[in-house]
Structures are given as C-alpha cells and as structure tokens.
Amino acid sequence: MSTSEPVALRLIDREFLIACAPEEREGLLEAATYLDRKMRELRAASKAPGFDRLTVLAAISITHEFLALRKQNSAPGHDLGDELVALRRKIDAALDAQLHAHLK
Image (cartoon, rainbow, N blue to C red):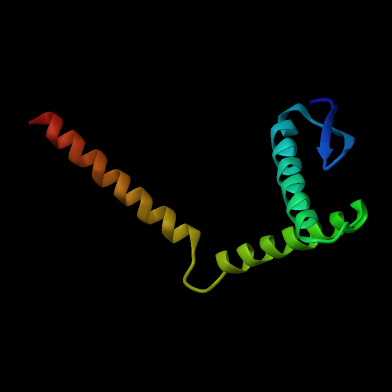
C-alpha cells in the first residue's frame, strides 16, 4: 500500500499542497496544468475576475467538455469494443503478412 505525499500545485498565482499517492502524482500534475491553462484563458477573456470566480468558471467549462466527450463516446454507433476488434483484426492481418513474407 502506498503512502500519500504532498504535491505542490500552482494555479494562477496561488500554490496548493495536495496529498496523493506517488503513482497518481503525474496525473495530478497534468490535471493542475490543464486547470491552470483553462483559468488563464478565462482570466484573459474576462474583466478582472477573482480567483474564486475563475475557479468556478473553469470547473463549469471543463465539466462541459467532459460531458460532451462522454456523450459523444456513448452515442449510438460508437462502440469502443467494435473499434478494438477491428484494430485487432488489422494487427493480426499485418502480423500474418509479415510472417508469410518472412517465411518465403
């Protein structure tokens, strides 16, 4: 079982220490970088919004992106399982072709 370690995250001009497992550190840093970028975009487009308002606006924007992607991926005709089967068939065909070429 891994122990939590503090990770320093910087959002706009504030620093936050958040505890996370070592294996989650990279993902947490990526998420903080994405959030910081979104907050900076919103700040540039707004007239001097406060940190709290930027945080809420960024949360709403990111949630909207997430829900749109989730809806897109659950739309009829979009089945990840079918896509994986098709990809596996392509890989198998390529490997078979390579094997047959090697055997000649």
